[in-house]
Image 1 (spheres, rainbow, N blue to C red):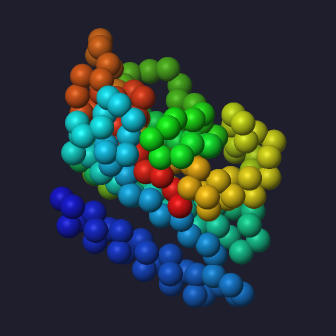
Image 2 (cartoon, rainbow, N blue to C red):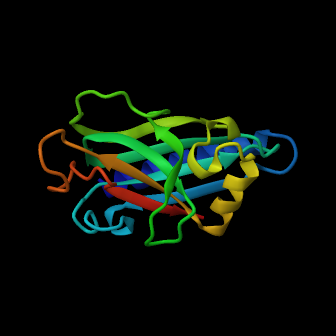
Length: 179
């Protein structure tokens, strides 16, 4: 499983490197973070075998941040975000929705097992929510560069009780500090 994730990561890195070499001027800046439960705040810490990676690429103009979010060995993923401003081990508010692209509509949870690309997209300053709403892209990029932002993937099996085990961590099952 981990071998497949590493192969997928290598493929993503190679494709992004190839893309960067085709663009004029300096290559776009990239931010990559592995995701796992050990980075998550309690109670998910160490309780999940899920893992993933988030890859972000800032365009040359500094106005768009494209991303790919990969998650494997995870059950019931129902949302993922960038949180800001928080050093490792602390929590913070949502500033960008990654999956789905906006607040999910009420409905059934418990989507089952997922292995592979969970979400891709392009972030613009107009997508910011919370404390970054109305701020320029540079505010998020500064947080990424300083390690004060993280990605986490939330899970929920839709049954009574929360934090009952893998696939049921509404507060976040896997996390990675972006730097």
